[in-house]
Every structure is written in C-alpha cells, then in structure tokens.
Image 1 (cartoon, rainbow, N blue to C red):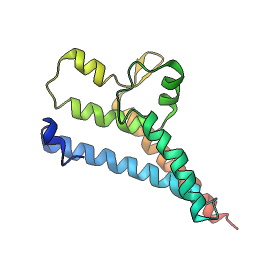
Image 2: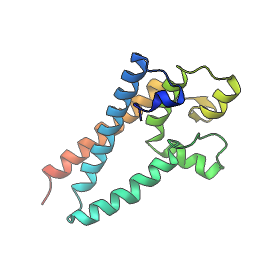
Image 3: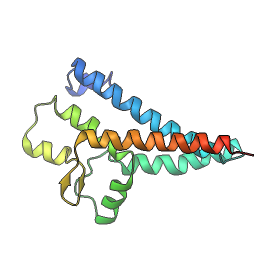
Image 4: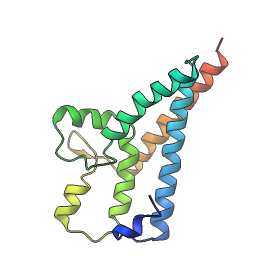
Length: 149
C-alpha cells in the first residue's frame, strides 16, 4: 500500500514512510501475539485458521481501515472503540493526513479520530494501547505454552 501512495497524491516523505512502517510493525506484533495466544489452546491447525478468520476479519472491517469511522450507528461505534485494530489504524490515518493538503471539512469527515466520551484520544496513547495489548497477549501466550499439556 505504501508503494501505491503516490498514485493518490500522498507524498513519499521519509518521516511518513518510516512512521507508517513503525506503526505497521507494532500492529503486526500485536496480531502475531494474538495468533500465538490463540494457537496455544487450539489442537487442530484447521480450527486455528477458522478461528483467526472469524475474529480478525470482523476486527479489520470494524476498525475503520477501509472507511472513516465517523457517523457510525451507536452500536457500531461502541464495537469500533472496543476493537484493538482501531488504535493502530487511527494513528496511521493521522500520519497520512498530516502530510496532505485537504480542506478542514474533508479532514473532519475522513479523519475524525478516536474519542472516548468526547475526549480526543492522543495518537501516542493509541500506539501505547496497541503495544500494551501486544505485550499482554504475548505474555499470556508464553504462560499458556509453559503451562501446557
């Protein structure tokens, strides 16, 4: 996706590319930790793939990676705020929009940000949420493997 950014007039600025890459590494770590945590309990490989698709795909769609999370129905907004992927997608979106020249109305519609009860969550806190969840799930995975059958 980064390689295609220029086709939609996103500049290839080194801070943007490095920031997106770092955020993607953090997200990859958290998703991998989740997968290892789940794999520690599942005995059949086919069941693991089914469970991962059943969990990860809805998380991806609810996170706002494919569409802005503004104007969602209340129940979907709640699911969006509970979705850990939301806290990786929003900093990436903020980073890209910080390098674009768009109108304030377009910025507000396409990059609304994540709020908790009206408070706009800072990007560093969102990144910390993803990192802490990744470390927590990795810790659970290590514990499950060490106490396994």
